[in-house]
Length: 89
Image 1 (tube, rainbow, N blue to C red):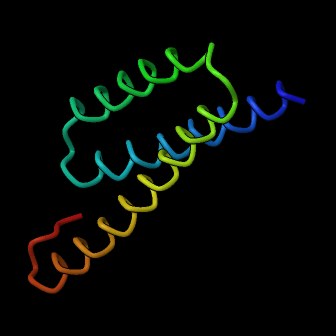
Image 2 (image 1 turned 120 degrees about the vertical axis):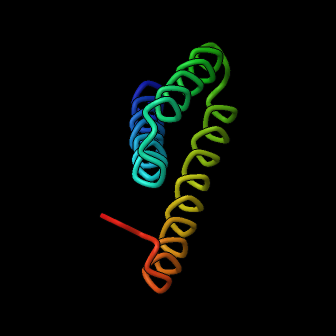
């Protein structure tokens, strides 16, 4: 059961980290920032492999909340940019 829970949390963390990377890259078009986000994700997740499931759950929840926050921030910024004409796609 712990293995299934770990796989679900790892998949969730990876998907939401990819969302964070996508939002950051879409905003600034700088590849350095997504590379560092990916590096930090690997760094933190490698440290959490040997810890208990509740600690990993907290990390997963933090990634989900960060991704939701970045999505909300990106939508409000894009709306502001579209209103001022500063956003080019």
